[in-house]
Amino acid sequence: MSASARLANEKRFHDQQADSRAITFAREPDRLRFEDLTYLNHETWICPAIQKLGDLRGLSVLDYGCGHGMAAVVFARMGARVTAFDLSSGYIREAGSRAQANAAIVNLAQADAEHLPFANESFDRIWGNAILHHLDIGQAGLELSRVLRPGGIAVFCEPWGANRLLNWARANWRRQADRRTPDERPLGLVDIDILRDIFGNVNIEGFQLLTALRKIWENGRNISALESIDHFLLDRIPSLQRYCRYIVLTLTR
Image (cartoon, rainbow, N blue to C red; front, top):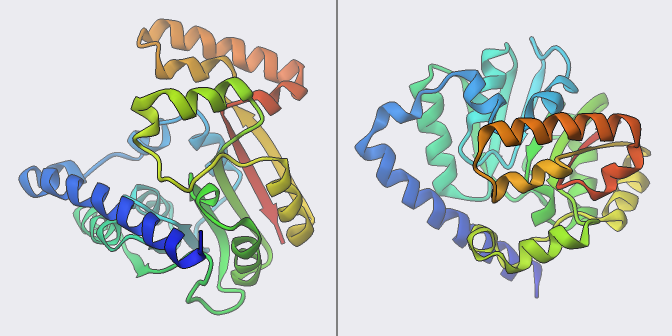
């Protein structure tokens, strides 16, 4: 499939998602307002990943593939100068409405992550959640390196594809498959090698080993127990991180 066809599919899918969400927000605009912890605690990797960005006060931060724009609002509240972009015009509208509802200053742009409209060395920090696995890693990596300032940090939270059982579930569990675009895929070792060729320094941390079962296990107490077991196992046997559901990538320039 050509790059233009892939991008068109991605834009169509996410515009449809955003249009569906827009109906809810038009009916209940108060739902656009939120507390930081609503975003920070919605997945187990979010808080640890954001901590890797360090103190954001006064820094220029790019929310890369911003989607609903919650991260951009959180960064603005932390004192960052925030720019956010997304391929989807529908999500850019939602991110703008959310920033306005939360009195946050966010500069917004509709853009293709593989051809960013920003000048060289524009950003001190770059953040992305579930975005790189939609892209051509080589092209996206070159653009990331171009717009990130020397000494800058980029942090990405991405689905990981080394666990064959998880890959089977992703492909066959319809409730999850329907939430994905036709062309996306979890990252793999080849993608990490490409990013290492571009950045040199790439750190990987795995999240949700047994906790990946939370998608089919609704009992909160059991999920807490699984999280505790995950922390125990991953701290003591780092090689198990390759079987996790998600990874946090830290890229430094």
